[in-house]
Image (cartoon, rainbow over all chains, first blue to last red; front, side, top):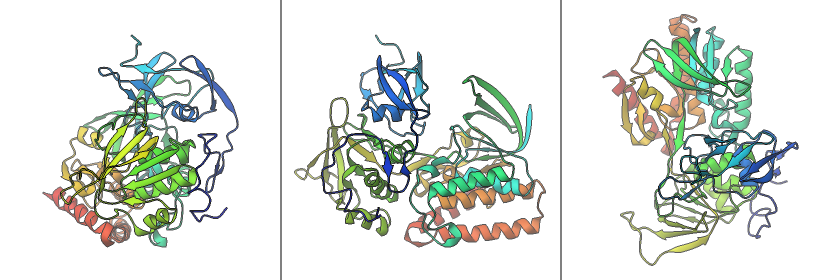
Length: 120
Length: 367
């Protein structure tokens, strides 16, 4: 593929089947094939083995990680590297887990976090 | 209690290069990193570095990270991953929360002779109506998602900020398959290098200079972004609003040093806007005002990976000298070479402000 921009990826309205970057002009094909299953708010979704929780959520179109304590406003990822704690969720019953730096495990149970953890 | 000659906090470019440099000369070095792999933010930098061949121009950040990790392995640097520093004590004891393979946590206390703080920086937010909605994310976060995690944070994206990060990440979002509807810049001119701006302009992405973001609209996430023109006093001009249907707004408004560890250790700090805000001071050896504590990389002024690497080498050499692994003369010669390369990196219209600010740090440190 040529590295010249403008021909391949702009101007046309793209059809997005996946939110995953499966093929990349520099990084090549994503070779991670092995999948695991995780449960997000009681719904089972597929995740790539070892990927960060947030990646699996984004790939499955889930954008809200938690709701704030007082105003109950939705929050999602901000920094992506474990600094800001905006993407925290309840994982296997434990609240305040940073989903951007925590890898998925088969059978993991992930829930939207309401305030400091409990759903009222 | 474990004893180590050198403990490096942070396994990014600056921390790793400090570790490698000190270990090469014979020091016993431990690198502690909170993440599951070392390399810091280099792994998301899939673009080629610029500068001279002495600065690995033309090499991609990801490849520099792999080389550095290999080098660290070769010269016997010990690396603890998934380990966070939770305490620093006056007598140079470092408390580390180590996560073991079975996910249990263990506290380890390490007695060090020298400590290097290479904690890096974090992204700035921009406050506007709706700025907390899911879908308003850091540009660095977008870069991490596409290049490391290989997922698209959004389909249609508006970039705020036209510095090098804003421009490079816009281009990389295109490479990953997203649509970037525009780059918004409050200043009347583009902030980053012309070469990066040209790349995204050629791809047909408009750059809205003298514009600012007014509002992100949406219920459970970003659905629309409203921007408008600003006057010469940076105030929004009514009636110039433009609305974009986007699902993501990425913020490239600079970074600020993560100085908490340095502050915990009573390192003297100063407010230097050109370097990202409050920064701990250091001397020509990268040593802080607290003897034996060294500062390298973004923690002591936000720059880029090349200067971070050089600062690491400088500290590593100075530490080897202080621990008597190399002679005063040899160290002096090596440090002179590194300073020469550092000064080269801080030239030109973009580097000069940083050079002046860094010189102010050196001066302030002496007082």
